[in-house]
Amino acid sequence: MSENTSKFKAGFVNIIGNPNTGKSTFLNRMLDYDLAITTPKAQTTRHRILGIVNGPDYQIVFSDTPGIIRPAYKMQELMMEKVREALEDADILLLMTTPDDDELRDESLLEALQKTEKPLLVLINKIDLTKQEILEQRIDRWKQQLPKAEIYPVSALHGFGLDEVKKRIIELLPESPPYFEADQITDRSERFLVSEKIREKILQFYKQEIPYAVEVRVEAFKETDDLIRIRAEIFVERNSQKGILIGRGGQALKRVGQAARKDLEKLFGKKVFLELFVKVRKNWRKDEGWLRRFGYKQ
Ligand SMILES: Nc1nc2c(ncn2[C@@H]2O[C@H](COP(=O)(O)OP(=O)(O)OP(=O)(O)O)[C@@H](O)[C@H]2O)c(=O)[nH]1
Ligand SMILES: [Mg+2]
Image (tube, rainbow, N blue to C red; front, side):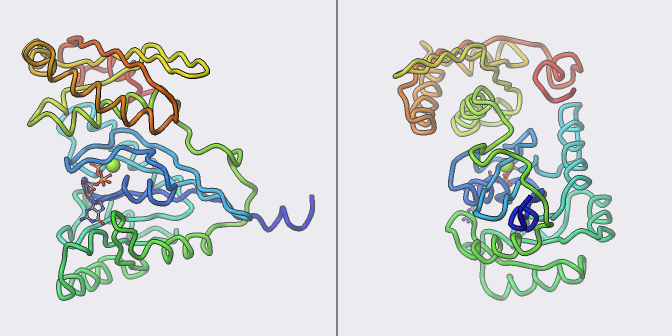
């Protein structure tokens, strides 16, 4: 191998943090692509998703993870396992916080971050929404809690401070050959991205518990030269939820389909034909069998 190859840098940068702090928004900004879904609701992300950024002599493999919560049911327990895994297999850790979020919702994770030997960047995101005074208090607080961390105030949404973070990540990357082909942007399938996009619309359009009781599965994905035909199933936990999801005369579900289709056409650069079906799977969030089928468990 030539000398150049040996100087290539590559590594895993795992993003963790409380719900709704902007982890997925940050990932999309780094990729310059809307890979991960983002919404104003907490617990938008349920799975770990890799997003790969390639440069001339580096490859950053970002991992987006679910927001840190105290699990109330089996699905959330499995989500938190993914967060803990992300702590273990990172080369660089990135803790996403906001000015009004000054402690991790899990003591043991804070302890793990205090003990880690890995480079740790704490991002204070959404600084567009705060005052200098508060920001300075937060910086002091994180310096106290995590003395070895480097702290960066940013705005993922508005693109502020991100170049500096990216530059620092590249500096910190270990020397390594790339882990993925240069044209690969994620480890997730197109089917997964479609199901997430549909879930994003459900998070946006429905209130209270509906989005949390929903799982989406793509049953068929057929691509031709000028069209992608997709058939997806939406699972809910109860009949009453099915009624709400579909809405009077099917209007509510139609809105989900139209909005998802529009975004998917942008994402894939092709015309999309999308069919949605709603089914009831009683208490799937607590059921190991369903959680396995839905990909929360191996
Ligand atoms: N004002 C402002 N809003 C932001 C910023 N970054 C993200 N947001 C918004 O914050 C909300 C949450 O963003 P997400 O990226 O979904 O947050 P997350 O941490 O991935 O959330 P979970 O997946 O639920 O843990 C969205 O409405 C974003 O548009 C920012 O820099 N400024
Ligand atoms: Mg997210």
